[in-house]
Amino acid sequence: MLKTMSIRLARSVCVLFVVIVAVNHLTMLLPGDATSLLLSPDATAEQRAELARTLGLDKNEWQRLADWIGGIFQGDWGVSFLSNRPVLAEITSRLPVTLEVVMLGQSVAVALALAIAMIGVCHVNGVADRILSGLSFLMLSMPSFVIGLLLIYLFAVTFRILPAIGYVPFGQDPAGNLKTMIMPALTIGLCDAAVYARTLRSSIISTLSQPYMDAARARGASLDKALWARALRPASPAAVALIGMNIGVSMGGSLIVENIFGIPGIGRLSVTALQGRDIPMLQGIVVFATLCVLAMSIVVDLVSYLLNPKGSYGRE
Image (cartoon, rainbow, N blue to C red; front, side, top):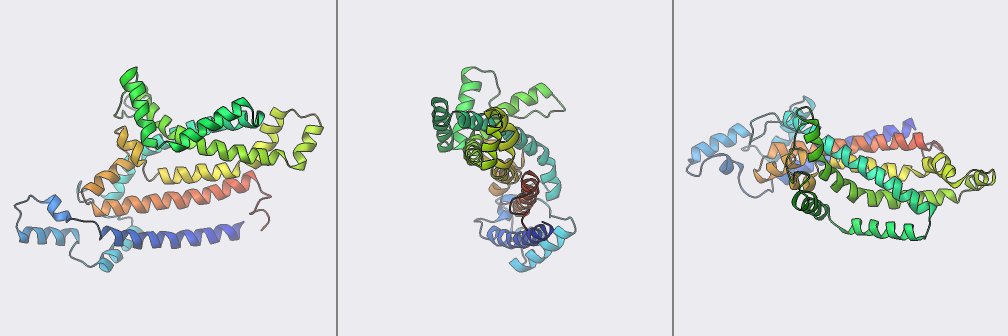
């Protein structure tokens, strides 16, 4: 186990370095000029050149890469062109909002997935299983922005019980915060629940066919008890891996959900940075998202090992 985790950590460092090099190169390919967005149209060439020197845009790609990597190891991720604030401070200030959206959405997804999977397993190929499978396929085929717009039309336009857009901090108004979070959480939850439910259902059905499950049923264990006490834990690593990776990816910002509902998280910050050619901010967000994904991949490996020590790690 320790050997495997050491190899994973080494690979993660290599992946992070490749991402840093790649994002530094790709930002050079963005069309337009950052100085033209930050200065007025009547700015002189001398003013543009001075701003370029101030921002470090006059250096070549490799010089900027070396400066950026050196700054990352020192905790200096650069300064935003648009807000003139440290990039890391901007990201961490938006992180609690994104974290709230992601965790609420994943909580909804896990709850729905457990219910759908358990009902489907208890009634394999039955009416309930077929209906829920059809609904899962429907959710899989619908993009998240369509689900979000449908929820806005239903709850904000038709019934007028929830705000269409906006965000209220929890510390300012807990009830208002809950109202602004319901539709974003449902949008994420409905999209992800379909994937989790199908994965968990297949894993549980496969686990139920194992000899030890037949022995448990022969000793008089009911189906419900066998499902919750004996089948769910060994069947969950695949679903846990999906959940963990989705959380890691979403921590870099839920672009669609945050922009549809006007939530000031990392996803909305990345769109603003892209529109304003805020290169340091774009680089910082990509690196932060990569770190989240790599960290969650390691966490998923540890949780999978704890859930099933006799799996791949337990045999090493």
